[in-house]
Image 1 (tube, rainbow, N blue to C red):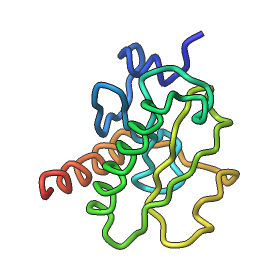
Image 2 (image 1 turned 90 degrees about the horizontal axis):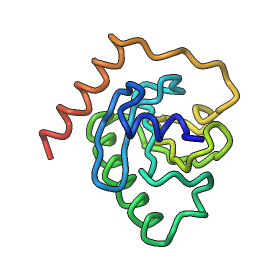
Image 3 (image 1 turned 90 degrees about the vertical axis):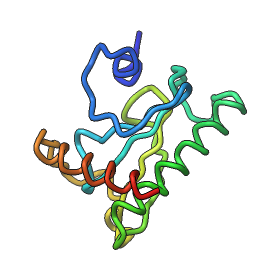
Length: 133
């Protein structure tokens, strides 16, 4: 059965796409812990990140690095945290979050769903940072 990420990759479900290349995709989390919370995942459907081939794992990490550097430019006052939880969706993925303290990485706290207006504003902020590269 296809994961939600596979359906997004195939454009069967909508998403706020931040970036993609031939092997990976980055989208805004629709239930973010913080403004600018991005999910990065490979286009190959693998449940656990450590089950990725060495090539796909390396590609995902390099893509995550690019996304982290982009987020750092968009959210200058924050650090970009990286987390791999592996419980929410049966498709390997990485969380990138602009944070100011470790307490902001509490994945058990209640999340506010992302509305389209906020998503558009965050995407514009990230795209503006990308143009400064």
